[in-house]
Image (cartoon, rainbow, N blue to C red; front, side, top):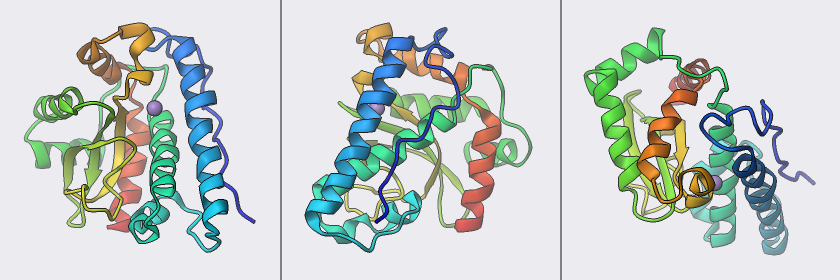
Length: 211
Ligand code: MN3
């Protein structure tokens, strides 16, 4: 039987230490993310669910039909963190280019306007949750935030704007509290220094194919 696995980080725990300390990264990946993976596998087993999509986006797309909070929360936790680790890089300070740069300009007017909108969602999300840049069915980019471990792919009522995320920022306190304490806006600013825009571009191209 298929079970979900924790993906390896594409960099060391201390690789992002300019922006996120190694202890936060290690706890976040090896305890929090591993916990979501373990609880997702356990929830599927205890609910007796055998036929589920092994692709995380496909699974999120139909998670509403399972009517199971344990599956929804832990599938979201697994998918959201998998995307998050993937779009970070110790190289830092890049900028979007090519089709993604054009798409951002078309949807938001400018890179600056996009970042302002995104930061507003990331700092304004009350309590735990995520801020997202996603592609909707029309192929247009949009920014949104979701509570807890929900995400824009999920076919559930609280998700108002649906699409495929290409960039996500974890704004749960566990993601930044050791380095930034309660100063979430500073963590959100630091995030832009470590985005891997080549990876975001790759997710953008893939998402456009699926729309
Ligand atoms: Mn987290």
